[in-house]
Length: 167
Image 1 (cartoon, rainbow, N blue to C red):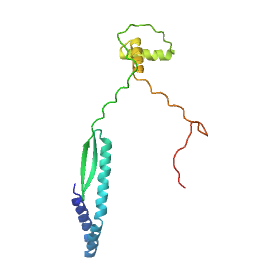
Image 2: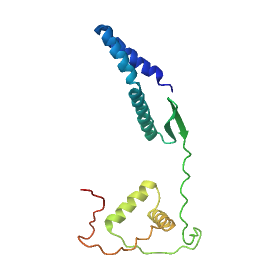
Image 3: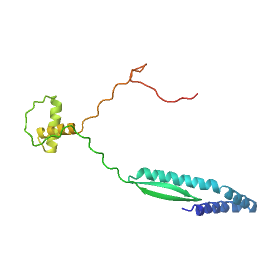
Image 4: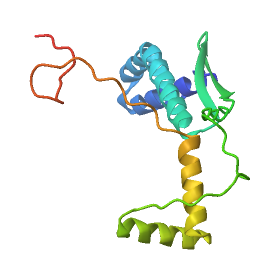
């Protein structure tokens, strides 16, 4: 993208604004227009860069960059390959869905039982089927192990302050 036409328009607008002031004002505006060209070019490049960054934040599959070549700016759109879905963590032993059935007595708070019954009914399945599915999902994707406890810290437990300060 050639920025020169934009800069020439700015210089012409400055000269037109100075014309009623006479030849000395017109000459001063012309000198000022030439001396401001570098600053105006830099401001335009910064605006293009900010626009490219804002557009990139709104795109999910592409990025926009401003590349400089001499005194010209090129807008480049790069397609981003979608990230492959994360592989499912390996479960311990696979569950055989066709195995023998066994009975299990489960005790839970009445409010939780009511909630499970409502969810199962909303999905159109039995409470037993819903619980089997929930347990299967839980053992297929076990939670990560808890972090080992670190060394005790002096001061108030659970409160820490980290950072850098210069006086």
